[in-house]
Structures are given as C-alpha cells and as structure tokens.
Image (tube, rainbow, N blue to C red; front, side, top):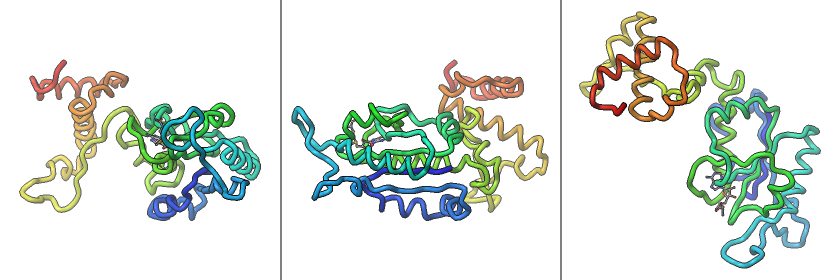
Length: 250
Ligand code: SAM
C-alpha cells in the first residue's frame, strides 16, 4: 500500500518511519511512504504557502493553490486516483473499524494542515474524507498522519511478524484485550495467574476471553452495547457480573 503525505514539514516523518516495524515494512516494500513538501509547489518568489484569512482575525490559512498543485503532481506520478484524506479535528473520528476499511485501499493521499487550517476550497475540490484522531487540537496534521499510517500499516499482510496478533488487539473484535504477563513468574511479590502456566490451552483461551470481557465491562462498557456476543461470551459475562456483584451498574 502507498501513502503520499502532503506537508510543510517532511522532516518530521523521518524518525517515526525509520524505526522498528514500519522501517522493516518499507524495506520489504510492503508499504511505500512518500512525503511531498507543499512549499515546492508554491510558485511565487517567496514560496508562500499561507496568507491571512479573508474577513480578518487571528492566524494564517494554508493557500489552496500549492496544495492543489502538490496533489495533482502526486496523483499524476502514481497514475491512480487514490483516496484523499485531510487530517482535521473536524473530521470523522479514527476508529479501528475505519482503520480496517482504509487498509483495503491501494493507496492514500494525506494532507496535513497547519495554522488555522487549509483554505476551504481544498476540501471542496480534492478531499474525499476528513479524519480526526480525537477531540483535541494539535498544531498540525503531521502527528495525526503518522497515527493514521501506523495504524493502517500494521493491519497489512506480512507487516507484523504474527498475522494473528493484530486480530487479537483491543477494538479489532469490539473488545479490549486481556492482560499480558512474561518472565519472571513472580515480580515484586505478584505471581502470574496459575492458568497461564498450566499448559492447558483451552483453559488459557477461556481465561483470556473472560479477562477481555471483564476489562471491557469495567473500562469501556459502551463497546459491549455495540457487540454481538457469542453464547460463550454471554455465559462468561454472566459469570463476571456475579463475581463483581455491586461493582458494576446494570
Ligand atoms: N482552526 C482549526 C479548527 O478549529 O478546526 C484547527 C487547526 S489546527 C491548529 C491545524 C491543523 O492541525 C489542522 O488543519 C489539522 O490538519 C491538524 N489537526 C489538529 N488537530 C487534529 C486532530 N485532532 N485530528 C486530525 N488533525 C488535526
């Protein structure tokens, strides 16, 4: 999958995309990430990419023309019309379901805003979808773009060592994941639950499912409202509620 990222600050992406899993994915050509400097497409003498807002007021607005030209050039070079996303606090909230949907695209073009944001005519003409990473405002779209690329990349074939690991993560199947433990068996007086060292895989699976349901009930009850539970999950949830009697509201 390819990602073309239009930004005023391409250097910001160097570190995060040159380490660990994303680094290996790029080396194996599983993902192709290109950063395009919008400033290179500003044709006036000073390479102006932002101007004060019409109507007055604080801040600067990113000009439409350099973004449009950078976008046009990127689309021409790829030779395919990729979905264009504008990172924006006003966009659709990024969830694991949206990440899954986007991981089916051949490629994405991602526009990073700065200052007060981009001229509205960028949205009107080239943006297919606006995406927000949460209800707070950052200084620019670069960090949100990194979050988007990272979350999508780890769902692509062969990017993670173990294909199944992303499918067991929180949110993938509508629940939070169970707790994890590793060596040593005892740490600061706390022991690893016996079942995890029992060697009984059926019991381990049951424990993990139950802990996952318990965590979701205690921390993110809203997720359970949208989830279609299997018979085993319903049974386990009943058991958990009995055990937690009084600790959770019905
Ligand atoms: N004035 C804008 C508003 O109130 O909606 C906020 C502009 S923000 C300071 C500058 C840029 O950062 C935005 O254009 C967007 O690209 C990016 N940005 C900030 N917060 C974001 C968020 N929560 N999710 C995605 N992008 C965000």
